[in-house]
Length: 114
Image 1: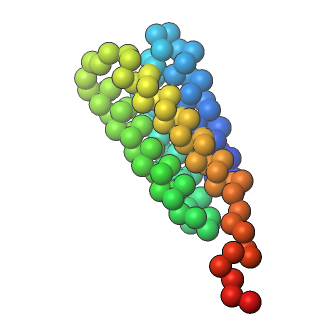
Image 2: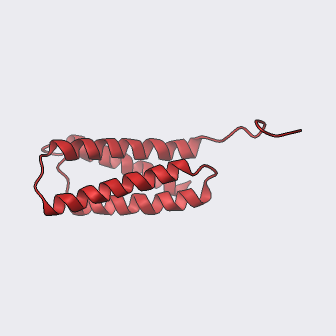
């Protein structure tokens, strides 16, 4: 549960930074890469402990997308609109899937043959 809570905070921080930076979506590549690494590590740790594997897998994929964005931005000039949407939507999606993983508990009575 702790890795998911950390992932939620990082996702909210990414969304905040994407919206309130000047111009929107303009973040430091090192901060973006560190956030991507922390998301991937937390998602792998959460995936090992959770009963459902899809939230962790989704967060690993989104962390890799953010890491790829940081690498591409380090070596090429882009318009700030594309990174804005990628950072914002990845931050929101990471936070939502981690929160889902924390809050959702499957009903134990469904599927039991008694």
